[in-house]
Amino acid sequence: MIVERLAVIGAGTMGRGIIEVAATHGVMVRAYDINDDVCAKAAATLRTSIERGIKRGKVSGGSADPYMQRVTFSCDLAETVCDAQFVIEAIPEIQELKLKTIGELDRLAPAGVVLASNTSSLSITKLAAATGRPERVVGMHFFNPVPVMAPVEIVRAEQTSEITMTETLEFGRQLGKEAFAVADVPGFAVNRILMPLINEAVFALQEGVADARTIDSLMKLGCNHPMGPLELADFVGLDVCLWILQVLHRELGDPKFRPCPLLARKVDAKHLGRKTGRGFYEYPRKE
Ligand code: NAD
Image 1 (spheres, helix red, strand yellow):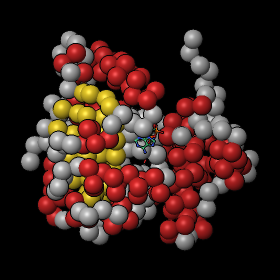
Image 2: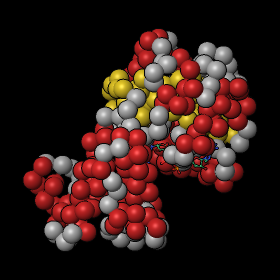
Image 3: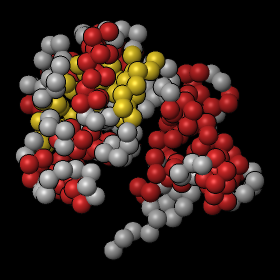
Image 4: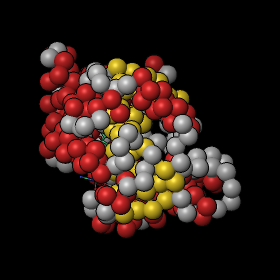
């Protein structure tokens, strides 16, 4: 099945990336965000990002206009999903919020349409159970920044049908991604491995093994990683890292996933990384 009409719920960091990738791959997109201000600014941010892609030769054509014409933003959820062939939610990583929203999407989206969640760590099986179409619920875990990062994890819940997996893997490829099927376990494949690495780097910093720059330089040069773990944590968001570690710790019950106290302290201080201008490093605002 070729998806021609996509609904994206949540136009934050990830939602905007998904909208961009869909629009630049020929898909008509209706996007919804609960915050009027986000809706009002999302179009301008999207245009800038597409223009950057054109300049770098990643997006074809000379203007963002034809891509922008495929996208509409709305603060009306029912209107957003009424004629969708596929729905992806990218709202904050809060289980109660995702459960409530997927229930609403189930009520409002056409029968049989796939409801996909971009959650980083929450159970797709629980989300599926909150709907009347559990076999059509699936995880679609993109990576940040979505227009740049190649993979997408397609997460099979207990209830996800074979046809839903096949269609979602195909849709991931339609969006130009390398789509991989993974099981519905906390953190799926990438975050299950990445977050303990980041957490251990924070423990090393806390214990004075070395300063942040040294830890990152050693990991880049010694392990051939393009970014150091602390630099990467700042990019992902320290709050996001903490949430994922808390889910891994709670769901898997293994003390090796316990979040480092220094990470929790940074989040308490609202030093969340790049998005707040300060995390393990400082990011002066550009004038
Ligand atoms: P974000 O905070 O940048 O964006 C979330 C957006 O959702 C905001 O614009 C907010 O206004 C909107 N929103 C809040 N409640 C809503 C509701 N009820 N209905 C509609 N919109 C609502 O967050 P993000 O980083 O884009 O993360 C979104 C999801 O993607 C999370 O589940 C996160 O775990 C996942 N994810 C994040 C990353 C990352 O690196 N940031 C990577 C992969 C997956």
